[in-house]
Image (cartoon, rainbow, N blue to C red; front, side):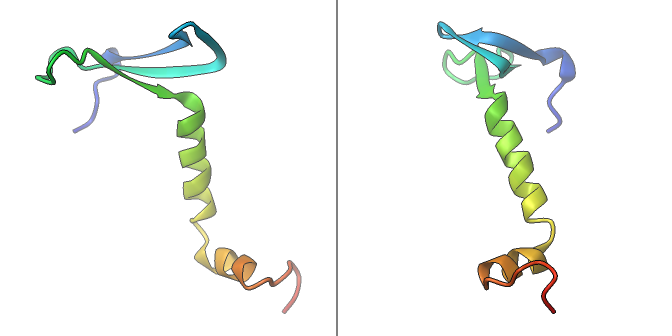
Length: 74
């Protein structure tokens, strides 16, 4: 399911906390989830996921790092 953009927003304050990056808020009021109205995800967590997927993009480099091979070595 693609989440509709008109049901997403970013807020910079959540539960009394402030953040420059903020939180992604997904409005799910239309779904039947026993009183759950929204899902709040820290933007930092999304960035960490993105960084992780970029790091996993080159498995050869990841394996070389695990084996202790330094850059520029044959």
